[in-house]
Length: 179
Picture 1 (spheres, rainbow, N blue to C red):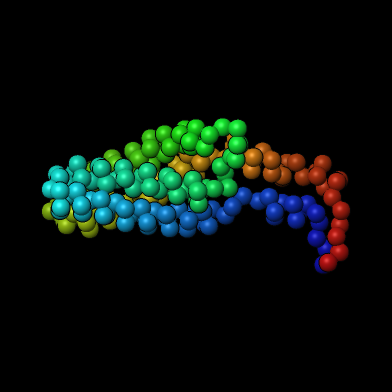
Picture 2: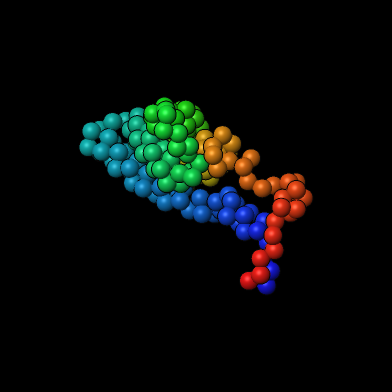
């Protein structure tokens, strides 16, 4: 069996599987759902906030929670480790993008869906919240994958990985390895 160094190099440098990242995203999101449900229950049932105000605050708590875990776990391979700049300064632009996108989709989506399901449909607020979270999840993943945690400026970015268009010059430099 023959394998080229190019194949080894490409396999080693290949981007993380979208499926693996999707699973991590949903794992973090599952914990975030717990944060959101706990905050919503506390604000609505214990502190007697209006269900829409309680929803907005609970969603923001989950958004911040999820951002921290996505940066450390889901997209950790895309985060630069430049020690010259404080970590918070590198994270702040991503947090702003995350809040503008995932936060907006989550808050606006949750509020609109809660208004329809609870306000108009008289559905239980926790069940309605679970449905709203599910419906917003895919949009949030796609925005995070393509913009919030975009790796085009990181050390592991696509411009450092071999591309098919670059294969001719690389093939000239590879060696065949007998296995």
